[in-house]
Image (cartoon, rainbow, N blue to C red; front, side):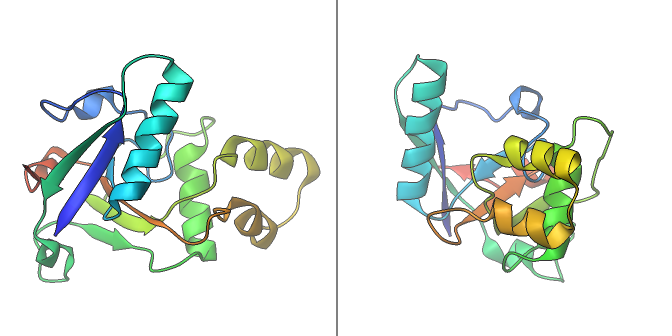
Amino acid sequence: MILYHGSNTGIEAIDLGRCSRYKDFGRAFYLSADMQQAKEMGEFRVRISREGETTVTSYEFNEQLLSEESTLKVKIFPHYCLEWAEFVWNNRDENQDFHHPYDIVYGPIANDNVGFQMRRFRVNGGDLHEFLKGLKYSKGETFQYAFCTPEAIKMLKKL
């Protein structure tokens, strides 16, 4: 399969050290199977950084590596669910030192206001069902692949 990464710069080599830590699935190199989604992410990165130009880099990935027979540790969230919301919370929460054991995580994208939702949840309380409802992406369910370890990164072939 072909996966796409949108950014405000070209990617010569993937460096997990340059990836932000507090993202939906933690520090990882994020990709999408949807080229338009990757392009929109690149446009977003240009807007917030105010530099560079929208760039989409393509990678080939053997999707059979997502199966149970793979030597990689893979976590798949096939849809929005409470387990997904808790996982996103743990990865986004800067007040804890959470590290999951997965090489690759696949699942829905949270909306752009995760930080707001977390603050609201902390101040007003509520339950995980409300938090989940607030995290759902406004454009519908769209998915992302997070390559979280050097072992997973080695499975990507730049095109």
